[in-house]
Length: 295
Image 1 (cartoon, one colour):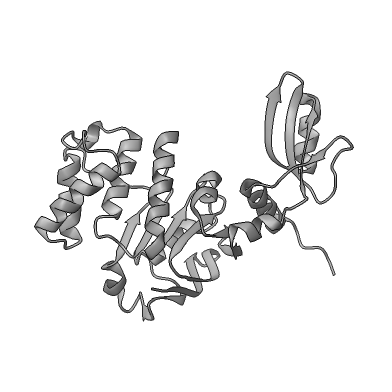
Image 2: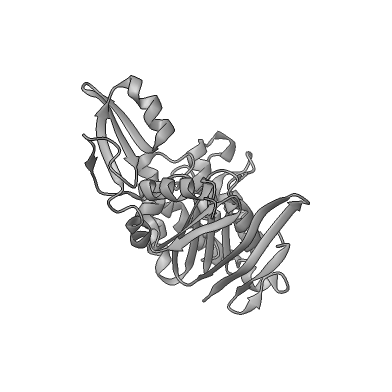
């Protein structure tokens, strides 16, 4: 089971590339895909889901080109897009039966699988209610269930925890961790803590280009000794944001507790603290945006 992305680019207009020369090789595990809006994450996922064709490069699944032989991948693919729509007049069971038929699942096997997944995504009690009356989080859980119907070998999920409450997010993280032992899971999200909790490897994108792909612990090493915190006044905060990478602020009775990523100690009272993935993410993104120094 191997997914190889080889120098893939996607051009939308003559002067705009959504993805540029992206390469990656994946085996079983969870790839966390991080990047700002417009970084190319959704473009990459649509290409991997065989919805969009790359302009340049190729993607292979176990050696087969997914453009030339898309059905070979589609048979083992589960996909939850960012903008997932449902039929409001169908209930959860009817909708999943419809999706199972599209995926070519046998009727009896589909019924058993639907019952299992409704339990997994905690919708069994609401199974008979029309989807139009579901909350955003409940609709997202239906989307997760449909992506898992065919027990996919490659699972692609784009912003999967959008709309989920904290308890549901924890349950989803546990589900992804259980699934990842014998399949490839690619998860794109803006919630860095979701990636930190589940990913076995992380890829950072910016403006359609790959910044880094590595193990979480290796990515954290890049900001080891570069994260600082100290207490400032509200008036000082604006200047600090202009001059430093600020990963968080918290207003307390004694002032604003600010956390920054800096190569050197940013203030005489700043204390070094352990790095988080969010610190590393901001460090890499800001470094990618910084103009190149003249030689």
